Length: 72
Image 1 (tube, rainbow, N blue to C red):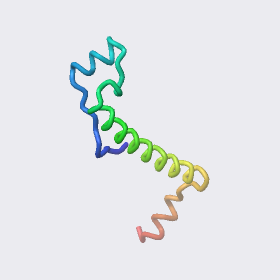
Image 2 (spheres, rainbow, N blue to C red):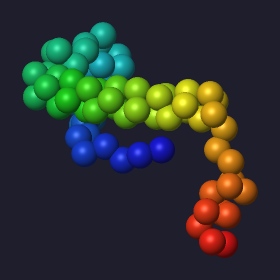
Image 3 (cartoon, one colour):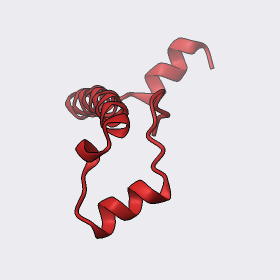
C-alpha cells in the first residue's frame, strides 16, 4: 500500500451525477484532469510493485543471509 500525491475529491453533486444520471469524469472537466493524473500515478505504482513481486518470485529473499550480512 502507498499514498498517492494526487487525489480526486468528488462532491455530492458530481457523485449523484455519476451514480444516478450516467455521467462520467469527462462531464466534469475539473475532475477529469485530476483523475487522469491520479490514475497515471496509480498505474506507475502498480507497475513498480508488480516488478518487485516478480523479482521476489524469481529469487526469494533469503532472510537468514540478510541477517548474517547485517551482523545480527
